[in-house]
Image (spheres, one colour):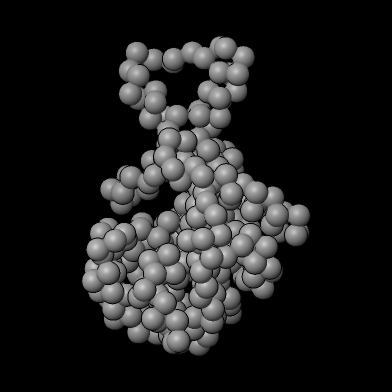
Length: 251
């Protein structure tokens, strides 16, 4: 199996992509690159069994309805609690599930800067579709939405405080912790880049999360949730330990 992890930024700069090959008893990072273009992502995706995109695949249904209504001047506040109304506009169903499961509040694709990456992601999904990929925002196809912070939380690793200036030591410690928790993961020549760039590190976690989704060790929406997730997107949260990614018996 080959999994692809993409830490998608609004532009090529700061976008990272990792390719992991899954072999008997080990997982090998075959490629890890920064400043990746859409075309390169789509090309790499042709060879991958599962692609983990670290970016929202859609917007809240309530937010889309608001924008549509606002264009015609017919916005209606549906209850007396403005805060709750705004929250439904800002967060997707899958965001609320992640909050309930992990305590982590995902960035709002409707009200935060991550929307810039989501704009790019919408175009990227169109490119994947044009290349013949089955786009299922619930994660049932080759592409699945992942969230490295939530995956790290589920795997018992540090998921906050390793990004940004002045966080080099924390980031390096996290890479060391990952190697200790997953001794079967071979970073090889890419370890230095993984330690230097948290974008590169997140793309590796995205590729690991894609593996979890591919082997049925990640959350999937139930029938009711799927009605919403097919447009909003669905974050695949790992449901088992890191060791489960390599311990699974291949057919």
